[in-house]
Length: 292
Image (cartoon, rainbow, N blue to C red):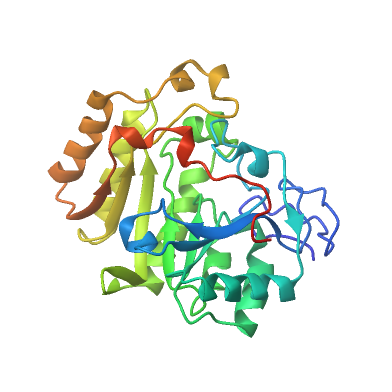
């Protein structure tokens, strides 16, 4: 496959089971580090039983603070066939997963689309992404994905270039989010669990509340005021974060409070907030090929 799955559009040839020379270094077949019930998503995603989280290896970004560094940067994981991927989804459903949660799927969209065209789980499919998606890839998932769970990490190009090697991050992510909203115009819930819809995530970074304010302002201007926004306080220095002065610490209460106050001041109505106790490495899953 000549790849243009993510905005980098490397056009490298991704063979089925051999590492590629593209940005993500991944083959065409999905590489997975963990597939298990996961309790640490938003309550409307995790519910009581857990979300059926499938963690993909590799990434279209290079976030210096990534808490999943071992799999996103170093590529730890196991290459699997389409048939095995379908079986993994079925196994998670049999364990009581409220949904199938595709974590960091951007660079595997062609593989995922092919599998979902053959097997559509009886529970919602969640596209849980860092946000750096090609709008064409998102359009190709229309009717296959039920819930979109994108990050909006940064607004300014210099910041996204510095921390994620993606100066066009907001341009691409905002375009993708608008398409996600078009596909899931109305949020649908059943028994307190989201069945269809959009939740935009934003991780507040230390020393970078200006990015948070700009992102919330964009949401208030471009999307309905009842759009769900998850404002996360869980930042913990990981990966290469200690090389950057601003990122060497957790956020302080004043920073998080400023972002929350901005959310309300802008008239946004639906959101999720986190306690500062969420900023712990204990919440990072063990990437040990469980369920793969």
